[in-house]
Every structure is written in C-alpha cells, then in structure tokens.
Image (tube, rainbow over the protein chains, first blue to last red):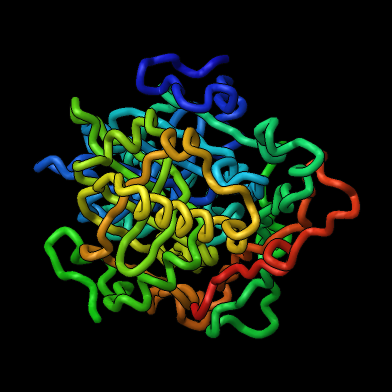
Length: 224
Length: 224
C-alpha cells in the first residue's frame, strides 16, 4: 500500500530519498521513541512540542495533560508530526556534501480528541506500550482522576511521507580525481542508540530484579 | 543570564522541570545533533522539518537548499525550533507516571536570511562544525555555485525555554505502601547515544586512516 500523494505530503526536495510505502512508515514509527508535534496557535504562531506517542492500525496517538497547550492546539486543528531517527554523520570531501543518514516520517492531519472511555483507555495502552513495552500488564492502570486528567489526540496516518537516507557521501566528480580523492577523510560515522543499565527506583526492594521487558528491551530499529 | 520570560516561552506545564539560564540552553544546543524547525505555510498550515543546525553567540543557524520550503517558510516569518535529547525511559508503578528523562530547548523567533557573503560563509562553518567537528579545515570549501544554492537562516536565541527531566519515577503515595511498592518494577532505563565504527567511503585509499576528529569524536553530552 502506498502512502497518500497529496500536494503537501509529496516530497519535492531530495526525491531519491522519498519512500512511498506504508511498511516504511510503520518501521520509522516503530523505531522512534518520541515525535515532534507542530500546530498553529489561535493567533497564528507556529509551535513545536516533543512528546511520546504510539501507533496502531493507521492511527497515531499522543497524550498529555488536559491543560497542555499542545493538546488544545491540536484538537480539531491541523497538526504536523515528525518522527526522525538520526543514523549517522556523512563526512564528505566537500563541505557542501556533508550530510546525515536518517529515517524520517512526516504526517499531516487534523487531530481529534479521543473521548470514548474504552477507545481512550486502549489508546493509552498503545502509547504506554510504545514508550515502555510490557509495562501496561504490570503497572497500576489509571485511576478515575488520572484518566480524567489525561487527554488523548488521534491522528490518521493517511497523509504521510517517509524519507530515508543511507550510504556514504555523494561526491562531485571533481572531488574524486586522483589528486583530490584522498584530500580529506570521507565516509559515515554511525550514531548508535542503545539501552543502558536499568537504574531501579530507590524505593524498590533490593531483591526485585528488573524484568525481562526492561533488561531485554530491544531497540526496535528493524531493517534499515 | 536568564532566558527571556515572554508569555509564550514561559513554561506553564511541568514548571519544576523548567530551567532558566543560558548555560543550560547552550548545553542542550551543544549536545543536540538535529533540530526540529516549525513554521506556518502562507495558507496557514503547520509544518515541522528536521534539520541540522549550529549555534554561536546567541544565534542559531540552519541551512538548506534555496528551494526548500522550510527555508522559504522561515524567512522573515515566525519559526519555532526545538532540540530534544531523550535520556531514558521512566518505568513507574502506575501507568500514569510513565515518562521520559530528557533535555529540551524551544526557541521562538523570526528567521532572517543571512545574505552577506562573509556572514553566510561563517554561518556555514558554524553549522558544519556542529554536525561534523573538524571537517571545515579539511574538506573543500563551497564553490561559487554551491554557495549560491545554499540558503542560511539565522534565529536569535533570545526567546527560549529549556526543560530538563532527570531522576526516577514520581510516584503516588498510594503506590509506595508496603503491599504496592514491589508490585511492578520501577526505575529508569537509560538511553545511550554513542558513535559507531567509522565506515570509510569506498573511493578512499585503504591506507587513509580515519582522523582523530572522526575516531575520537565526543558525544558532547556535557553535564546532565
């Protein structure tokens, strides 16, 4: 299934980096941990806010306090969401061709508040399981008050674009001549994300070992 | 020196996480590798774009193709820029208190194109040295054509806000009672960023060893 080809989600710059299938979108959203949510304030100012998210079956969910400007600003209003994974730094023989390797997904749409209690609880599960897989079944569920204090925004993943850059530097022919080819180092310095050693809460009994869903948590980076 | 206290850069949610000095802003911008730039299109749509940046003396620089929508959209127009470092996942005894540790800087302002050739070249140096420290002195500088094709946007770091969350989960008293305290694991799973092994460009002579500025590149994470 291909992603939607609307004008604003059609990638104009760097077309060779555009990826147009839904599996690629899912991979980027699976691999990302936070997203950047942009909206326009009622008086016309752009705002971008980093926040956790989850996604399922073509819908992206974000949550926040009912008082948060981002939730108010994105409800029944247009938002733009970006999830970017930075994979490496491109060193080139030319300053101009320095770049980065990345996977990036951008979604345009209108945010709608999830108000149905069952749908909202499910969305909170999706968000929690994205940021902390395994937690939902072990942690205490939301109290009535906590549930009421939390707002959830849903966004269709219909209008989306994915850009991916992999590989080494794209050089000018003039920089690949025998006298220039070794003029400066060129290549990729990969950026690696990994989980550190779990740091237990000070109140936790010492005998309580961190569970597998924490110690064996995968980076979910998937095929790159 | 404290950051500016305008209404929109005043942090309303999570005040205990707000940091109001310029040194903290510099640390976040030093540690970040890419930023998220948001602007409003002429017809009123929010757009957010991930991009490289550099900063120096109270100014943030981003660059891009002269044809890029983000550069057009941010020139003489309001932008909002966010740089976020995700430092760890907070596992709590309550779903509601799951969270993340992070350092985040948000800047509001009007982007101005840097057109003076000397200032523009300097800005490109600042941006290149941020994404690839050490490269500027070794790589070929921009040709006339490359220079003309590149647009640079400058943004004052005057109106900015920094939020930092560190430490373990903030729990409810009801979850710290003897029967609940060990009900589920709680703590922090740190997210670690590191540089991988440099991957030389296929055209590079095999004898060309990666220089120190690549192999010994620091993460610049600074005090956290």
